[in-house]
Length: 317
Image (cartoon, rainbow, N blue to C red):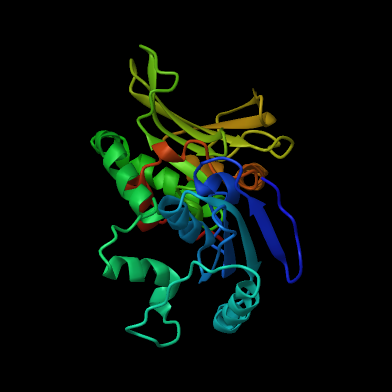
């Protein structure tokens, strides 16, 4: 991928191999602006506007297999129509355009055009099967179906109610903007098979990027449940409210972190031990800023729904 900045914050990507648009644009490129597609055939161009760059480009890449480069100019939503007209006029002076207009409805752009490109609307009227992108809503539906059985198993556990209270307290106090970032920049996996033995199993793992932030362990012989909270090193000064042990752990991609262990039902209290909340927030944000969670495909949207609806105590108390 080559990016060449030009005037007005314009960026140009060369499409060097057939791949998902997320390879070139990332997984969270909901940008607003004007894009230009460059085609191998006769030097054709296509100019369009969008409020969600990745969604729109994914759709085009499924419909056309001869895209060789994509240019993008970011702008405000109220600039879209005027900037698009100017870029179309400028582009068609030097290149044939692939744009086709809605001749039976020759009005200016509507809000629907920002979601479904006019080119796609024309083709749909002519009977061309639409090339739906794998948008976030569809991926979440597929993920819900894939993870529902494990969520149901967790919900059937006698520990579920107290575990949910603990996790809700953690998420709402530690994770920034959880309803927006959940399932993308951090994820929760109920009943994961990771590190399962005859003696213990995990009831839940919460990850950011490629590192665990929270692990809930059930020890099968005794039925005891304990939660491990990973926090950035150097913050926890000792055990206190809700914490019965602090140790250190090292991850290859993160380095050394402190681990605060709390019994079931005490995670909220543990977050009030000096340094724990600060260290937990610091580690979570550091990992989320590295990019989307690599475990997002295992994320339980149903569990996140339950956590968002079971908000814990006042996060500022």
